[in-house]
Length: 108
Image 1 (cartoon, rainbow, N blue to C red):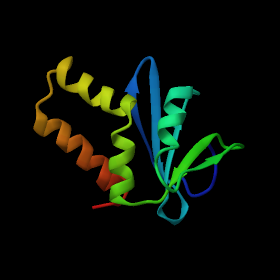
Image 2 (cartoon, rainbow, N blue to C red):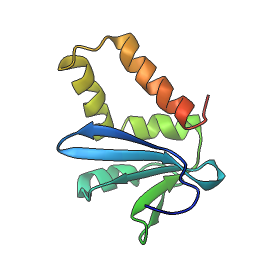
Image 3 (cartoon, one colour):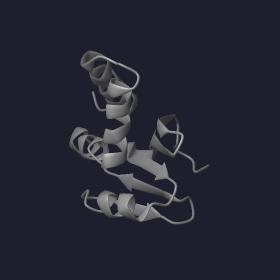
Image 4 (tube, one colour):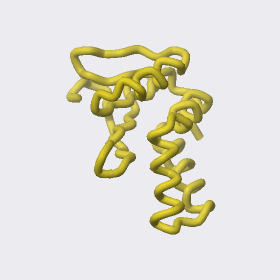
């Protein structure tokens, strides 16, 4: 993923799956992960999605609404639940993680 415009990377996930969320050119949200047909089908339900086969990532319009939809995809939601249940993180800590991701993406 060496395309120009990727300025930062944030990795979400456990050892079994890692999801990279990045900010790309023109404020688009870029998401990369190992191939998972179920996850791909869920990603395709988010409007404005676009697959970039050479770079192997998905891009979406850079909006707060789109980021909320991406966060609701099961693997990300599972990670946040793991963070609460296994790491014993408080709800406020999870909200802070979500808001940090929004800030990172420039959506605040």
